[in-house]
Structures are given as structure tokens and as C-alpha cells.
Length: 117
Length: 114
Image 1: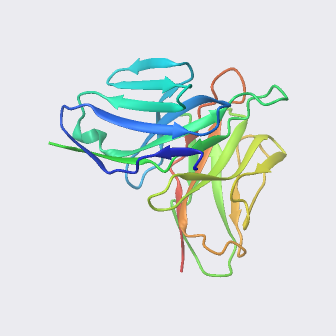
Image 2: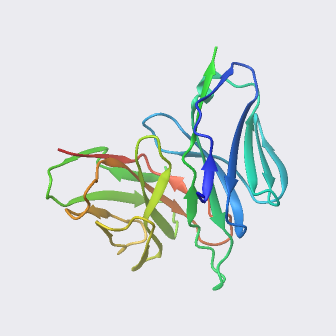
């Protein structure tokens, strides 16, 4: 089982629809969860992070976290063609025994999203 | 402007050559990271450093080396021991305390072996 799994897609949605991107993780010690957007040929751009169970909203984006099910998702409302990109889920463990937070991330393979007019 | 710069943007290497990729940041971040991305895949961690003069191997360190002599700089050398170096290389940085350690990425270097 991969540490972080995403459906590679491609996920195709019509303009104006809600796009739902899903991610599961295997390490129950994981504490923080990040969503990155990556346009073709470009570097990843952080769009949201979440650390508490429930929903976190930022504009058209909503991140959802369910630690009991080891599941995190990203919803994009009113999808636009400019949202077409690969979305990467990344997971970070909490503080280590030494009390420092070393920030190591494990990435999923990414989901390709296409929003068609 | 604060940010992360990587150079060169494109790099071509002949087999048997070592090449060094540059990564500089002016965000005053303590931690820096190197990732490799292959087509259709996520990012895999090569090396990371939380503090000057210290670094740790990531998941795929074989054939790579790094140094961290300055807080702002974390160069990556791809050695001839790396058998399949053609990939997109990404450098990132983050704080190490007082936040959730979000990582921010540079624009990347695309390495091709001829």
C-alpha cells in the first residue's frame, strides 16, 4: 500500500461544476495535509493546508479531513478552465520525539483535472 | 521579492558527467529540500536540510550529493552514479517552527541526459 494514494484520473468536469479530488494516507501519525496545484511544466503551488478534522474553506476551495478514515479531499466549486492542472496531495507527520517539526512531506502521484467549457 | 530561485532552468548532461543544480532562497527559511519528479508521478524526496551544515538522506539519495554551507543555499550534485537522472528537479524551503511547515517551491530545473 502506498503511503499516500490519489486517483490519477484524468478527472473531467464541465465549467461551473464542483470538482472533487480525493486522497487517502496510511500513516495514522500524520498531522498536516497539503494540497498543491501544478500546471504542466511548472512547479507545485500551495493552495491549501488542513490539520483538524472537518472542513476548511478558502474562496472556491474547500479541504475536508477525516482522520478516522485517513481521508482528505479537495473540493473546487464553480470550476474554471484555469483550474485545469494536476493536484498533488501531501502529508506530513507531526512533531518527532525530539520536539522539532522537521516538515518532511510524502506526496501522492497527483490527480489530473480537466475543466472543459 | 522574496522567493526561491533555481538555475539553470534546463540542463543537458552527457553520460558520466557530474552536474550541480543551484537553489537559493531569501525567505529566511531554515529548512530546504530537493525533490525529483518523473512524468506522471508525484514528488520523491532526495535530500533535506533543517539547518546549516547538516542534511539527511531522503527516499532516493543514491547518486546524489548536497551541501548546506549557507542558510540561503542548498546545491544538489547529480553524480555519474545516478543511472537514470533525466527528470524535473524541484527545490523547496520551509520554516521549522511556529507554523505548519508549508513548503514553497522554486521553478525547477529540467535535466536531460544525452
